[in-house]
Image (cartoon, rainbow, N blue to C red; front, side):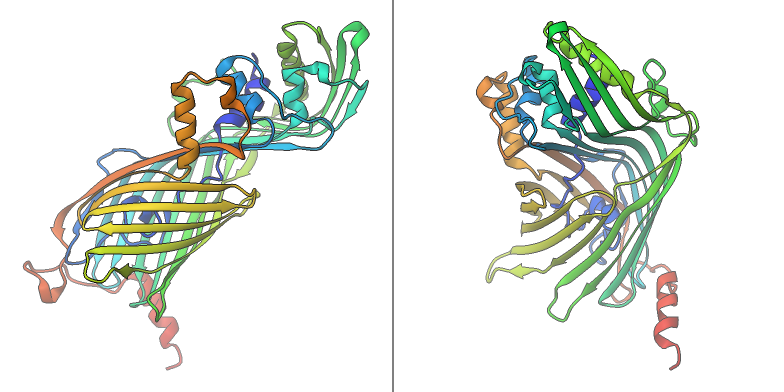
Length: 477
């Protein structure tokens, strides 16, 4: 099966970005502090001065597929046949598949000053971002073209996908301006690895059953940095061939009612892909022979691939990173007479360059060093997800594992374990899976306030943000 079919089906199955990791909000883990710029990772009089992940990856992976093609795609991948009871023709029904992968391989953060609870950090991570919009008819043509009974169809194969993989090296800084207000910023250098984009804006198919053939016309645009037989594992090493930059910044405020509010713009940036990339506009027609033959799927995929890559030339291009604006509000409740703390957090997240809005309610239940979390989220595609997390967290060590799509993940694992059956491929509201895990610990001297210090503390200095803040607030007084 050639690259065009793999792109439209397998990539569509395996990548969903719109599945953020909400359960880490307001946990104070090292991972949380890098993802949400104003979140602090240290607690004076309890934490040690340096936080590190010991090169143990802290990662998050999630995916989901929505639409009528769920059964057809899953059965093709796992059973090598198409089970497609819900696919439609001529009704403009689309399937949406997106994914996220985010792995921090290196995280180091240092508590630098008691004045403002200042922290500075460095991190290295790898991220993958993907989006796919696939029409029912595109999957149906591959699954069983005999359902196309008319002689001609127009604009039923209009679909799109985008995918990029890149490395990210970041410098992070956060501090408190006063007892209520905090600022944080994360500056990142990006190193692109792979990018592929296809956007089909016009499509026509004319079917000639008498001669067992069809004429497929596609128009749109194509951009790719990947060429079969050229890419190797060496290309995964960060280099300056595809440079980029990104910024995350945020502010937090503690209200009179002890509600912690956060405002974050996350990973706002771009990648400039090199002139060795293939870029082109396509508008051409190909002949598909042998529609009734067993190899019809490969014939259709070969024709589609040839059309998409028509007129591609070597040229650079630029893509945005998948960025979000997020707002959260959290507070704490101690149950009377117990050591149990309940911390609910409301999170609202909007993607800036793609469709996608999600609301989530994160519920942390903490008893001593054990934290159990339940998360419920609902997005603009009317998908409800339930997640869970277990975390062991002390002032100087933390380990967590969780899943923000718990029911769908359990269902997928159960189906794979039982080698799948046709019943497993009946369409649900959506197909999804998610898993994340992290670890870090702290070393060095315990952070002590002057009045509690057992050692001579570091000489304090007024931090950069605080100096700037004091100039603004005292101007004219």
